[in-house]
Length: 474
Image 1 (cartoon, helix red, strand yellow):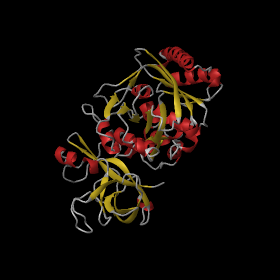
Image 2 (cartoon, helix red, strand yellow):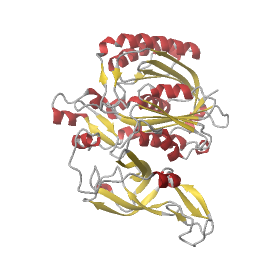
Image 3 (cartoon, helix red, strand yellow):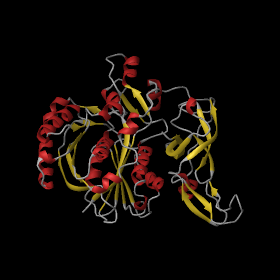
Image 4 (cartoon, helix red, strand yellow):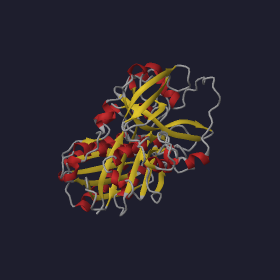
């Protein structure tokens, strides 16, 4: 039987106060905040961070993953496999197939559906960077986040939750759509499709309960996800009345701080439910969009001791809401500012990127077997004892480090000035000079604890240059 054996979630550090939108554009000021992916983040980097959080609990499973399904409605590349970069950053086995399920929000529910029935170890990664035209409801209510789930049928990996059933109904509904060349989605009048989704939700929910051999009142947690706000409220109300449980969804606490991260919303709600559920509890996840999908799980005894290290709600409540609306518009490409007087950035070349993929994507260093000196980047010749080709590989993406010294550069180019460069020393040895991200100038100091984060350094000639930066441990 396929079970869920690990999960993780990632919410970006920056928040945009919804009231800041009204301050600039006018209109009624909405409350709360929405999560905003930084200028150096996209759906791929969000997915990497969420998957790292999931695999941190079961590092032994990294080599056993045979399928990686990356679901997003905002892929950085359209004619290239984005999941390949996630595969490389995680250091998965070469025989693990990595594919995208991109283009529509429902692809997240589809990835969960496929993985929950797979006989092989399957890692599902959900991520989205949601936006809309300035002043739109999508801009106000959207959010950016990632979530990841590892499903396995192997008995040596203690299950956190067993899959009881999944059910789905599909309908061609002219509801939400976006053409490849459009910067924002277009939606139809929600009142015309609300009743359609309500009817489909009843059918899928009843089918899932029958497959799981459960009654509605036996469910302990109910989560309802989707972008159709009227249908969300209607379906959540109807199912809550049947189960006697309040539904997590459009009105939950995460919506007030993170917003709706589209493809990642089902994953974020499921991760939050797992964070709060006791062993032996049943969870139903209902996803609305181009039909309705339902996933039913029962938590296991191992969940109590192997929850995600960082609960989904923790980073949601700990971000910085000092982001200005002008910076947000700039990061999303709606405000074209005068660039710095710098030479045009050059894209990374294909050949050296392939040769150094372990370092560039996986942040794999080397350690001398003779003297124990750690080399960053990896090298054939030891910097300590000068021996040649006596190295072992070491992944440092999860190793904490300390800022030794730093500089704040107000002239260096960055979409979020000033540019902060730091020399950091990893626990266990090894120094590295890198950029510091998600940090304000006044909080940086020698001795600050940092960890590595997978980011996008720049985009040039249509090529995204991914590498690692340091960010404060919060």
